[in-house]
Amino acid sequence: MSVKQAEGLMLFVTFAWSSSYLLMKIALEGVEPFNLIALRFCIAFICVSIVFFKLFKQCTWSTFYKGVGLGALVWISLFGTVTGVKLTTASAAAFLGTTTVVLVPIIEGIWRKKWPPKITVLSIALAFLGLILFTVKEGFSLDVGAIYCLWGTFGYASYIIILGNIAKGKDGILISMIQFAAIGVLSLLSSFVFETPRLPQTNEQWGAVLILAIVCSAFCFLMQMIAQRYISPSKIGLIYSMEPVFAAVLAYVFLHEVLGLQEYIGATFIMIAIVLKNIVYRSKYALLQRKRKHWNRKLTVK
Image (cartoon, rainbow, N blue to C red; front, side, top):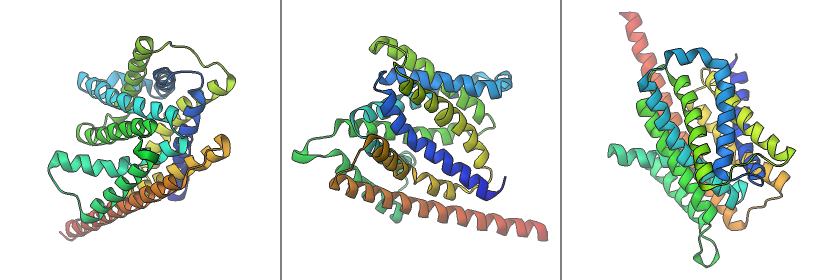
């Protein structure tokens, strides 16, 4: 696969993920949040297991516990996101969800007791302004849906940091499969306890659930792993930043959602914050690559 093909693949993955906000909005007309998450991830687990079923032979208790623990964290995060999508607009949920890339350095800085670079602090401040504009409405009332979306975003940012610290081995695919199963089982149990589980009621709702499970979860999971072998992390981050733009366009075309002036300003602040964060990541990655080439030259000379 060429770099251009990999970039095109990642662009498709980003587009698919951005469509998930629209699809969740459609699916939630027939099922409750836990019910939707259960359907999505149980189907996704079955699809991925068909491709990688031989990997289960390599599963250890350590891998199993990692997968279940990470799955539980994603499950908590997803409940916030899905509930937020139900209560607010799909485009607002997408922009709020993208702030994960800005929240990660905040949580990581607190964890490691290390202050991030100045440009990262600026991106955090801009993202925070954007979040305020999305969540605080007229009369200083709070958008409950936006609060739930922030819950999901904070949970996912925590997941990214923990994943980077405990899943550094070669068992990434297996851990992800166990995650899918854990999310599906936890959501199914929660649906029976807190909701009245049922299947989607219309063909449109079934279509939304199946696309979420097969395309947005199982297929994109596999394609992301393939594409990341050919593209630098900084470029992937830049491609990901298109997610809220795609989501806003899809929400406008299919749901006729239009952001207000305050939300447009908030979205602009968030997008600037994401671009600044990508600049920081790109410069760090370029510096690392230069150091690696320098040491490789030294080893060659020796």
